[in-house]
Image (cartoon, rainbow, N blue to C red; front, side, top):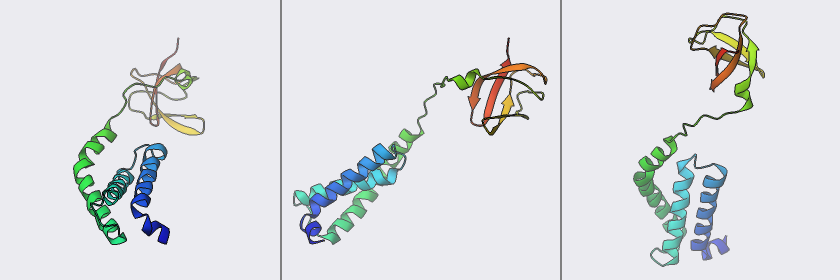
Length: 151
């Protein structure tokens, strides 16, 4: 413990970098809290290293509290907007080429179901399809397969 208190600035910077690495590499920027904490620890360590702050545990605690709160106020909206951006390109896979015969009528309401790979999927179609029709999956969404008649 004495080693850490004697080298508090460096310890805070190391903890800050580790928090940033975990946030970016492991969690993929999914939590904003670790990002703010990592930046705060890094900033506090740098301020202690340049003698802008006293190198004590109490100062480190209060500095991190205030810097984290200030960063949260400044960066909350931009980071939230960054996380809300979605990629709109559709993923094409072999799963979309699945063909099967309907056991019940299908329309755009999603009342029909199909069990595939142990999961019960809702079936939807732009045109009404009757039971017994050979169909192929043309689009997939969460829990929904969009199908159309196969030629």
